[in-house]
Length: 297
Image (cartoon, rainbow, N blue to C red; front, side, top):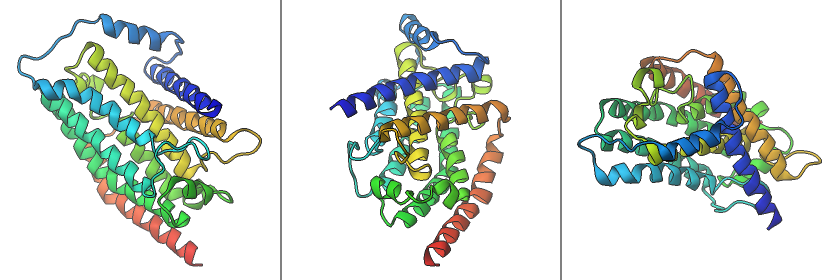
């Protein structure tokens, strides 16, 4: 019980830390009270809706967005025997769950009946389709080494050498792809504040927009945890408890996301799709071939 409480507190601290990092990436300095102030302001904001909107989708989309992220969190272990849903096909399940991020963004753009929202939703779909193959193939290579799709064997297979060193090409592909899935700069085309004024959720205000922003923070932390599990050895580490190592690695990965996004220019959407199909997929196939050869030898 104490372990679960500590994990819950660390996860909440991780969400707060990601919120601080996002504020730093936008403004260039840390404001420790900014996440709380933004949260309180959102509930005092006037609810503004478009004239013709789909009531069911408009109300359900923010909830679906968070629910999908929590579904992915449920299969990722923070430490040994602390996974909520211990699935034998967890590696396959996480990719299936993340697909619904795209669905929720399309629903958001469609339901609000706004031009910017629709463009952001369709961009999210094109972007995720382009990078989903790279994600699946990078996970496949990690599964090949572990000879299992369950999370625990994947982590235990890295006891002698983390996958970041065993398959660096797969790590780079997975790292870039999850940044695109979380639509973080320079891959923030679905939201694109300076171009689409918020994109997929441009027409959402108040509490609904707060749910989207909270879901975005959870998504970044979840994908950072996925990078930690598949390529950085998960809870493996000396001296400290396993969940502490998981938290340290996950927060460092999240911090690196914002650091990379701060210093790289935004990529045009057509170039992003071109690189995804022309270069990422062949590189992912090469990574699978390289891992297969090493395993055979």
